[in-house]
Image 1 (cartoon, rainbow, N blue to C red):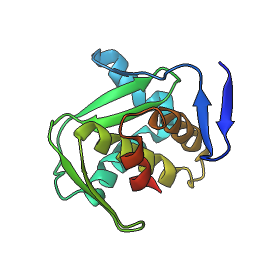
Image 2 (spheres, rainbow, N blue to C red):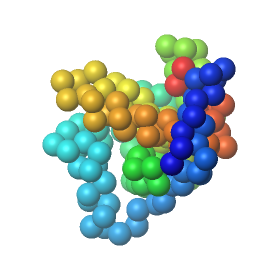
Image 3 (cartoon, rainbow, N blue to C red):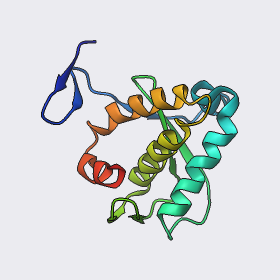
Image 4 (cartoon, rainbow, N blue to C red):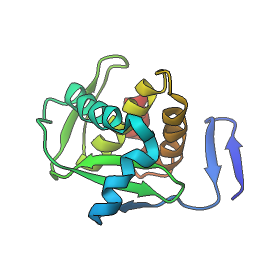
Length: 148
């Protein structure tokens, strides 16, 4: 797959669309986090939950959907289909987003945070894969505003 760079936006421009597929098979679901984080899979999972708890007063736990991306990436999103008010103190972002978008934001922030850990290179790579998907997502402007 050929990748070029949009110099103005510093974002990858891909010729193929990256798709997200919800993981519904229980065995496959159990393998998602280890595929991304290896022995740090519990740390990743809890970091994503904690990140959304920090970002949104509307999140108080619950079940999550897992999504595999066609480029090898992964993200999680709350199963509860409601809007989440997101507030990012670091960049002054405030907005209301869908559960799916909230999950993408929380997963990207968790990857970024964990990329500074001793075994952080796998999380930096996972962040890159998710970023490629984000740039094609319908809510790209909102997601990028929350992350920047």
